[in-house]
Amino acid sequence: MKLLLITSILEFEKEVATLFKNAEIIVYSTSNIQGHKFFSSTNIQDNWFSAQSDTFNSKLYFSFASKEKIYEMLKEIELFNAEKQTTNPIKAIVLDIEKYIN
Image (cartoon, rainbow, N blue to C red; front, side, top):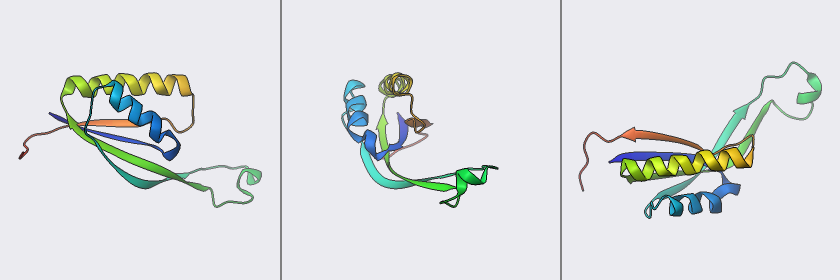
């Protein structure tokens, strides 16, 4: 068993749900989060109306699943990101579970 953590902008919520379905991961949890991005720009015009940071409404997804299903999900995410060509791709991380209580 592994733990899958995914972050994406809120606008991709329906798409991420479809990716979970395609990977046959039928149980997952979510939490609304805010992502922050700092920009370093030397051009004052790029920073005229902001403090060189942006906040994005995002979502955190997590699920405990078999490595086969998680690796299928990672493939789905890679395909989605390749097709979408966005500055805010879906991000994922996989963690090993050493011990768990069911």
